[in-house]
Image 1 (tube, rainbow, N blue to C red):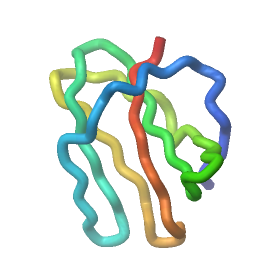
Image 2 (image 1 turned 30 degrees about the vertical axis):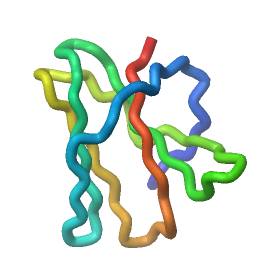
Image 3 (image 1 turned 180 degrees about the vertical axis):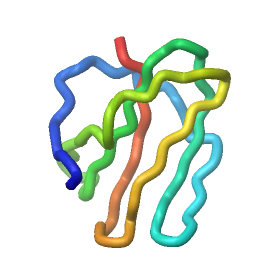
Length: 86
């Protein structure tokens, strides 16, 4: 079961997705990262007045590319962003 939580952590939102692919009910994305730093993927379902929710737990980069994924079989429209945690 997916947990919807609003993030209370400060994120630096200057990261761009490098790749976004959709395969078999899943969307996967990668972004450039710094090894050892922690990143959080967030999503919202409506951009005007967006309420952003954490997608899973923070991801610690193990090299210069980090990745995340989301099951989209049961979800409507979703918008994504990634930020480095401070």
